Image (cartoon, rainbow over all chains, first blue to last red; front, side, top):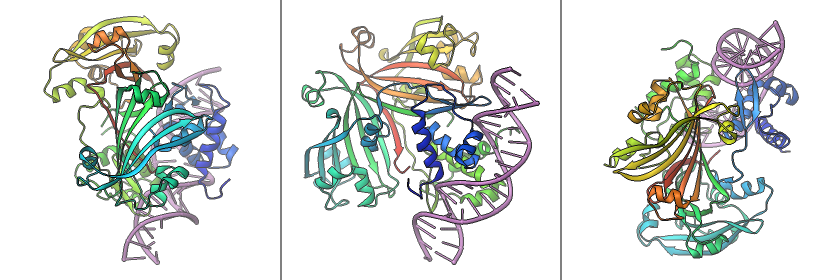
Length: 239
Length: 239
DNA sequence: GAGTGGTCTAGACCACGGT
DNA sequence: CCGTGGTCTAGACCACTCC
């Protein structure tokens, strides 16, 4: 166990682990009990529980207790897709990524527009197939401006996640993404790549990511198998 | 001003209001400054700021400060679906809703579970077809607990939006919705109702809405034409 | 009344960003 | 170095649920 991990994060990890041995709607130990078990303050317990509540793993009822949230679907959540690997690992499968293509091309039309570049500016073009236990899950095309990420190599990307590379090597922080989620019938070719029947429905996610300076850094189209993925979100009505 | 509104909620409301006079990426007063301005503890300030951050209105940078999040304009978009009529009107078409069914039934299995009811508890069951310029757009089934909304009539719903009725007649406030977005191939029957070709892809949105007391008030499944709708969202990457 | 989550206080030290 | 947000403590009272 790392020493400088915040207490509440350790608590989150520990509770998340122990959730696996509970059933839906089981009651967790009360907040005051957790303070005794983990020797932390109640505030720390609540911060940790807030995290789990935000992720939809637990729910609280005033005066009654904290409970294990029912599982709505088996599918993996697409909405926090930055860590495909983590998500797949979390459900006990082995993730992998196959680079079907990786090269530098000049940006045209839509890509140039989305990345706020001039026509002809150079961009990385990559086509990736994501698999879980060697079964195809998602298929995506990404574009990144070369001038922002010089010396980006396929080799790096095969060793680390794209977002890790952008964060660590290129110091891109506080990224904001706009996502459009659509339903599409797969083409025969796409269906073949993803190993599903022709004309099957799929979730298409188009994402445009900008950094903290409002500069576009990535434009991606992803096709995800409709039988494996859900895009989960939460909305507040009072704004 | 209500007297028993939690301090942090008053703070949220007040800050949300003052955000309108800021520009994107402006810096807010620091947390310690806010404690002095509002005469509350720093913890209370942070709880309030957490709310605003969750809703995407602000973002924080360690060591620098708290900032106003960039503003976005919503286009025809499924993700703020509470006002189908407004959205359709906004693009210059005439919205209408056809009630294909409206009755009271007893909740079974999934519906009872999602609404946190006992099996057999009564629920309103309604099937609605939404049209724009008389062209079918969306098709949805909704369930609401009868015990929360006595005397809900089809007549009211045909005159006002569901959420307006819940808000004004039943005083439901600060609703939170969990949505799962999926891609589905339409059945032949569904395709016929929506006027698209058989096996067409569609966006399915399953929504569970709770009020400010954590009580489930609505469970809805909606099928939206894939050629007409997009589910748009935005996400921050740096948690 | 006892136990729960919800709210709140007044401190403290750490990690980070900029001067 | 100082000011920022991030984490954490040890209390307190309120609002709610159940018996």
